[in-house]
Image 1 (cartoon, rainbow, N blue to C red):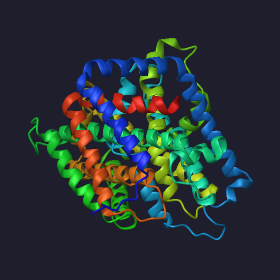
Image 2: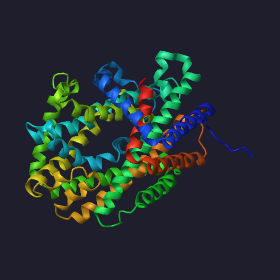
Image 3: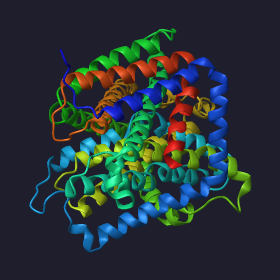
Image 4: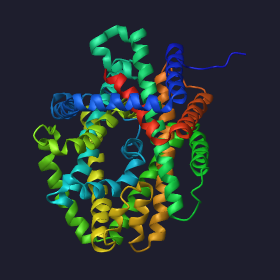
Length: 476
């Protein structure tokens, strides 16, 4: 009996083969493979950091040119097409899938880390908040946005596949339907697969630390695998309900609880100070965006290592996520004008990040200086528990800690669903066909298996290095 599927054979077998070859190399000689990948990362970062800076700036200016000009009224779809999702649902899907679990932990950890680093020597708090917002907001979303817009435009207007190969249509024309297009999609699948895997593995380690810090579970060797199994089962079951039912409802719940959590921390913290800081952070970010957006540290070499470890790494990370997330944004944006799409993708998340980093970043620095007497700063490397340490200094910490844990789990499930949906969308041959439900289970199973194997044999370092390896292939 033949099992029904909608996979494009060359793409699915090529991506599985390539992924297995990399995993085999990692398992065969983990340390040597990691050293090769680390050397490749160091070489590309040192030689091409300027390329990341210029490319992200170009993406941003090009999107603004499209949105503010006569092209802004073009619809993603036919001229009469209405949006597939209402605005609130579209923002929820965009928000929860693109922001991800990392911001929950790093909202406290990153500003505090910058505050304690040499980069914040002058006006420490202002500098710490500026760079935190800079790394996560409009420049990052410009990278996502242009990839997504290209896929959406050629997908809805030219009926091309909703996959990475469509971005190359202006250069390759009909060749994207052949082997060249298959290779591009194979790299897109592998980059998305390992990007999601790296995020899930990293997040599981942090979630385990959160459970331990709240004294809910012992920090045993089985805790991370237990978290992965539990969350993957829930996520796969939700993915079987489809994007309009399961994923959409989950995203709206995630969005609502996240804003409730942020509001409570704002009210329980130094409220007036945070509101004032929010106003200043907007001005500081806007006034410094152009200057720092083009800064490659040619004249500031004493901070070059910091620049490589933070800004360049973030830009590489956003580029690695762009193929998969771009496809997802494209698929949910039918019926929107280019102007709606661009301002939605650029402005809504950016405003959120200014608010989020103000509440948690300014809040954590204030608590560290006024209540904790430096204790939070001493624990800045314990990213998984730092958020909960911060909440301990605020009123009603039991409530906010439970909400934080719930949000982390929701983001975890959303990330898995995003991975399942995007990977399946790249791999299928006929985008008009409805894929059988077993394909969602297949991608969920593959994500869980790869996460388990790489975590057990190499930990977080191997997860990050593997993801970056596929990023380098794409950029080459």
